Length: 353
Image (cartoon, rainbow, N blue to C red; front, side, top):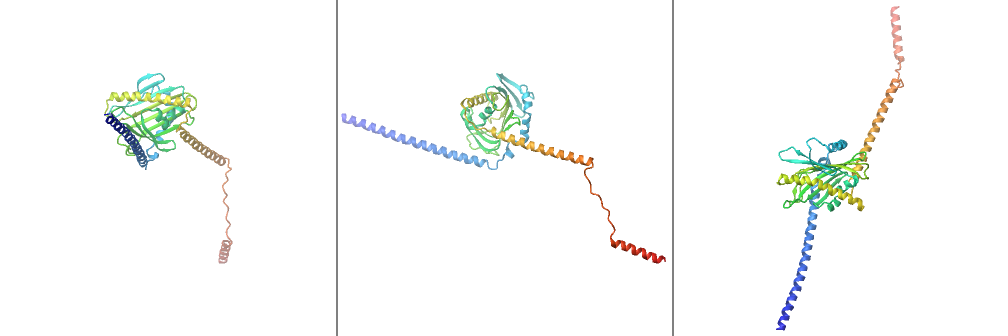
C-alpha cells in the first residue's frame, strides 16, 4: 500500500514538473512569436507609410502661403479674442479660459470650437515644444495609440496620429500636415494643421477609422519674449469623428476635449521647465524660416532703395545739364565731288562764251 501510494505521488510530481517545463517552453515560444509578428508588422507599416508618401509634396498638399499670410493678422485677432463675434457663441467660462463655438455651414449640425486663455507660469517656447515634440507627447497624452512624423521639410511636417475613442468605437486615424510660423519680432507664433485626404495618403490599417475633416490652429502671443513666462493662446479646431453618435454626446466630447487637452499641454510644459528635459523643437526651423524671410525682405528693400537713388541721380543730371549728348559733326564734301562741280562750271562757262 505504501509503495503504491509513493509511486502515485512520484508520478504526480513528475507530471507536474513536466507540465511546468512544457508550459514555460510554450510561453517563451508564444512571446517570441508575438515579438516576431509585431516586428514584421512594424516593418510592413513602415513600408506602407514610405509607399504612401511617394508623390506627396508640401507645395501641392501642404499649408499654402495664402493661408499662412493670414498669420500677419494675429495682433488683431488677439485684440478681439474675448469678443470674437462673427457667429461665435460663449459656451462656458473658467479661470483664465473662455470657450466658444460656431456652427459650420452644411447639411449636418457640425461646429468649430475656439478656446482662449492665458498662462503666467510657462514660456511660449515650452508651450509650443510640448506639442511639437511627438516623442514627449506620447508620454503625457493618454489618448494616443501612435503618433509619428511621416515626412518633414523645413517648417512643414506630415503627421500620422491614431487616437483612442470611447469603447466600443474604433480608434480614429488622423493624417495631417502641420506648419509652424513665427513673426518677425518673435512675439507671435502659429501652429496650423489640416487633414490630408485618403486619396493623397491612403490609410495604413483597416482597424482604424480615417478622419477626413480635421483642422486645428494654435495662435500664441508672448507677454515679453520667447523664453520668459507669460503666454496668451487662441486654439481654433474642428473635426468630423466619422461616427453615428448622438449629437449631444459628440458636442460634450469636443467641448471638454479642447480645455482638457490644453490643461495637459500646460502640465507638460511645466514639467519641461522643472525637469530640465531636452525636447525636439520644431519652432527652431520656424525661426530659421523667419530669418530667411527677413533677410530676403531686407535684400529687396536695399535693392529698391538703390534703384530709387539711381533714378533720382539720373533725373538730377538731366535737369542740371550734366548729361552731355554727342554733337553732330559737319561732313565736308569729298575731293571727287569738288572736282565734278568744278568741271561742270567750266563746261557751262565755255558754252556761254
